[in-house]
Amino acid sequence: MTDFIVKHKLAIAGIFVGGILGYAYYYFVGCNSGSCAITSKPFNSSAYGMLMGYLMFSVFEKSKPKKEQ
Image 1 (cartoon, rainbow, N blue to C red):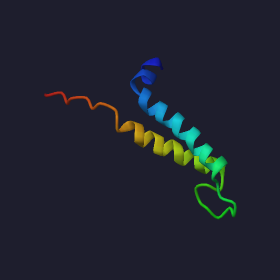
Image 2: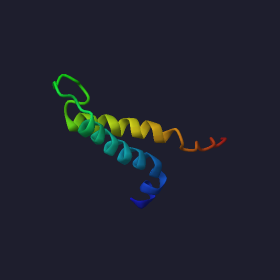
Image 3: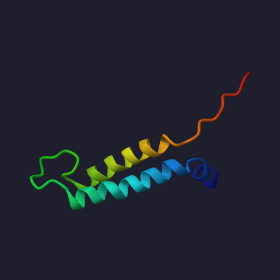
């Protein structure tokens, strides 16, 4: 379990930070009418933030060299 966490620490950090920022966007900006697909509910906004955080942080992961056969 700890090996998995160490191996994917940037992705986990991105998911965590993205979730917090997604909820913060819902809380501070949000959508008053309720017709906005992403910002109308805190779960949607947090899930979208998690996805964006994962994608943003995964850019900084180093790729491993391919092993030659």
